[in-house]
Length: 52
Image 1 (cartoon, one colour):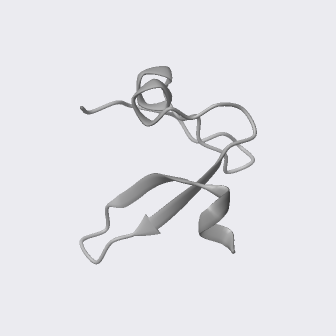
Image 2: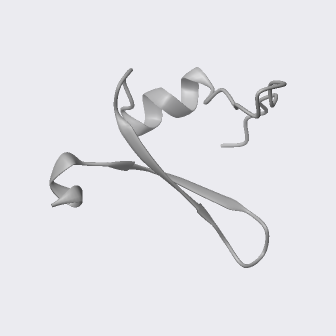
Image 3: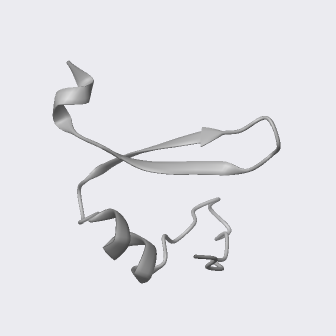
């Protein structure tokens, strides 16, 4: 799934609705963004138990 989002003047990016739905992300949820060696980003949901 390829989705396009714009970066705001504050450096914020919107996670497109289809991506949020696919990941099950809701307002207030935590996510992890990882920068890969090839320059791509990986976004995944973080469960509260991951923080312990």
